[in-house]
Each structure stands twice: as C-alpha cells, then as structure tokens.
Length: 189
Image (cartoon, rainbow, N blue to C red; front, side):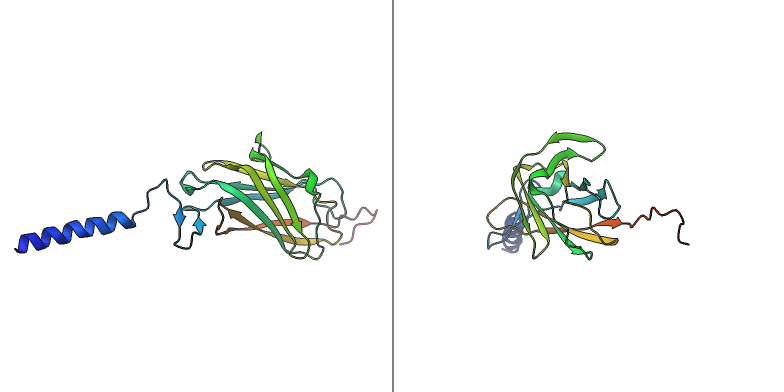
C-alpha cells in the first residue's frame, strides 16, 4: 500500500513538472495571451555619423542583437528620445534596416511600417518579415538635421515579438552626444 502511494505521488509529480516546463523552442505566453521573449534582445551600439550641431545628412545607427534562445522573432523596434533639449525629427522615407552592424553590413531588411509620434518623441519600425533569432540588426535613422543645441541625447530602445498582444522588452538607452564645434580663429580656453 505504501509503495502504491509513493508511486502515485511520483507519477503525479512528473506530470505536474512536465506541464510547467517550457521547451526551448516555445515562447513565453501568459494566460491572457501576452507573448514575451524567452531571452530578450540586446542593444549593442548607438552611434552617429556626424556629432556636430545643426549638421544635415547624419545617420543615427542603433544595433540590436537577437539571441538564438529568444524563442520569438523580432517584429518591431521603438526608439524614444528620452533626453535632449531639441525634439529631433526624422525623415521616415529614408530609414533603413539591415543585418549586421554599421561597419559590417549584411542583407537589407524589409520594413512594413515606420511611424513617428512627435508628442512622445517615438519612432516605431516594423520589420517585414520579422528578424529571426540569432541575427543582429541595425537601424539607420536619418534626422532632418542634427539638434541645434549641444549636449547628450538619450534614446530608449524597446523590442517587440510578433503577435496580437506582446510585451515590449526595454533594451536600454542609446547615447548620442552633439557638440558645438567653434570654427573661430581664437579658441576659447
């Protein structure tokens, strides 16, 4: 009798554990249907081609790495200007995305939708198709011009998996510094 109780408890425990284990290939999905990355992407770098104020023709690059164990592809990135005096506006028609980094460009990545909310200072980029786990993607944002006021500008980067209801994973801040380069004959000390 005692052996039967122990065996029954062992079988029930294995059944309960099997129901709670998440297989590596499955996404984390809550009961309400919200989808999460199993292992979130990582913000690798943020850089600009020109760091002088009022310059035209700059590109701001944001590089994100999606780990193999993410379990879900990367559907959307939002880039939100959180700090900086000037409200930087971007030319949405010139935004690009590609595999790799800015110094080692790979294949272009299609964009389904690109929007900017000026009130929240957020640009949203939706990939088509979504970026597969194990890839690195770089987004190139082209401002109409660099800010007119020098200083540090912080951009919060958030990643979203595909789905009707998804949890955005905040990846961190991309930091860009803009300088007021004086071109006068006498430098100020």
